[in-house]
Amino acid sequence: MADRLSDRLARRLGDQIASGALRPGDRLPTEQQLALAHGVSRTVVREAVHQLRSRALLVSRQGSGVFVAQTPTNQPLAFDPTVLDSVQAVVHVVEVRRVLEGEIAALAAERATRSQIAALRRALKAIDAAAAAGHDGVAEDLAFHRVIGESSGNPQFRLLLGFLEQYLREGMRITRGNEARRVDFMEAVQLEHHAIVEAIAARDPDEARRCATHHILRGEQRLVEGGVISGRRKRNKPEGD
Image: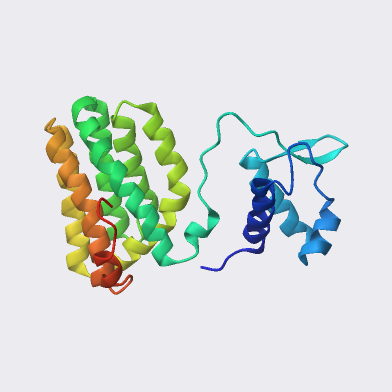
């Protein structure tokens, strides 16, 4: 996956802010000055500045320009955009998902309402329908896991999964693309999804945790079996991942 010019510029400017080369209250050079200094278009500059504004690192003042923001007491959550630069890096985000999904499913087994369990079953049907129609099913798969997050009864999980979706979407596109190449992979994914829902419906948090974690682990194993990532990387992971 190509590294966009705007991502590179945002990273460069962000590093200057982090190192103190650009201090809180400093006025950023104009769009034209930044474009000339970095050999990019003004559109690239605007996109990079937008990224840094969304991370609360820069603020715009009407008629005055763009300034380095004061360091906030609470830092916003953000991942380095390079997390999407390669398949290996995307798998790192999948590992983050693995840590979360088991506990979220366990809480859902304890707290899901009848309507949420019904919503989970509808989400499963939507995934199956998308696969049957030849679609990648990424949006439906993300929606399924979003409902599990909502069923945990903790709104912070819903917000966290919502943030992660921008990174998980690419990882899920890779895993589902890999799984679509083999019937046994597709059948295994379907069984794993159904097992998660049945454990939640049965109010069995231990089984829900096991099924959700197993699903993520098997997804990683299928990437190895499909030749998308190397088996060596799997063996060399630090313990506790």
